[in-house]
Image 1 (cartoon, rainbow over the protein chains, first blue to last red):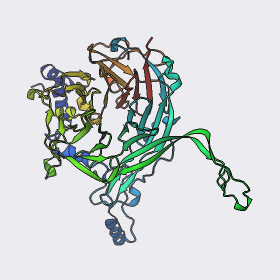
Image 2: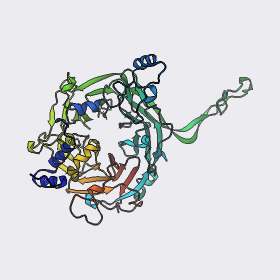
Image 3: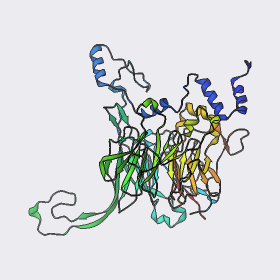
Image 4: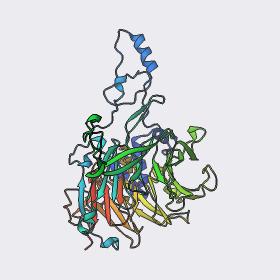
Length: 108
Length: 445
């Protein structure tokens, strides 16, 4: 068993036997062992179809505000992560979308 | 037009856009399209703005200056919206621009974001009426009692003003994100395609649209493919094609039935099952489909190649061109950084003898179909001086790197050329980097 051989060398050996694409696949599966078997299937496509989905329910938000009364609402993490589940998004969490007031730089 | 690709000498004519290393997101170019004569070039960006450039006509007679394009009009086409009912943010990014063939002095184009298509009229005003009886020149009304004589208002020349106005708004017909619009050769109808459906519109009618393709499964768990692009045949007004994320192209005939769910032809290259990998389906996804000007062929772009199909042969493409085969051994990292999902477009030259598509590191590729010749060029201000012939580039896939070659690992994957355009009649090409536009012309001595 090649226990002491470094990982990079192992893949090079595989390169000679199988296609570069399959070698890349082996690399990916090594990094993400839980990766599903259907890459082009439902999960990927449904993620694509859901682009733009933002989660803000004014009912949830107002109820949470009423319940917590004196306490502060839990605020979102500073990074832009998808807000779902227990966290109640606030209007401030939704990025304000405003049209460009500046002209395109292509126009000189 | 010039002869073989190998004889062509491309020179940088103009570079437009900000020189800032920091790219403002709104400035990211999202679409590029010449009109039918090549006189106008439209660009759309992520900020929902359209900039139209016009070819300088005086310079057309001097071949070395014929590719000078200057700003003709710029306007805000789409604005960001929020669909509160579906909790969906609607980007203002312009996905596609398509010109309507010109019928009168004004120019018309269709522009679309993810949800709404708009018909814009771009018209010139170079005269204005002067000499009203009841109004001053600045618009204030005159006291009628001061009017002692009458005059006939006349049109006097004024500085050219180009106005863009939205004439029609085609909204609320797409649940999913619009990826294509295509004007029919009948000049009356056009199609719009989203991930799962294709709709047919009449250019004059905004409150009705016919659904002609619907691939949404009854159970979304069974979803296996989405529509990636669609286009009408350039001459046959009953024919259109749409490509899929599984690498197939379906051709439909609208005479056959109202709902074109059953294709009349299906173009698919058989795959060797022993070569199948995790990446196979992702890299086979077609990002663009374009008919040739002749209408005999169509071209598709998938992640690594450009394929030319003869419309009479469904079993396999007649030509396959490798754009950047060296990326096949980098698919793992390209999947991790999402580059594997980049949607490259492709285009034909005016006489269908050459095709062009973009790549990474601000490289773009040109293939001469007749002479089996190809070249890699770069859109870069540092490496090109105006009117100097640009040098071909070469990527070293492995082994010893020669001088002037770039190794695959040095490629900048943030510098993508997704959009290119070829003048319909002349050897002038336009290439869009992230936020800049490069115009090249063939030297033509």
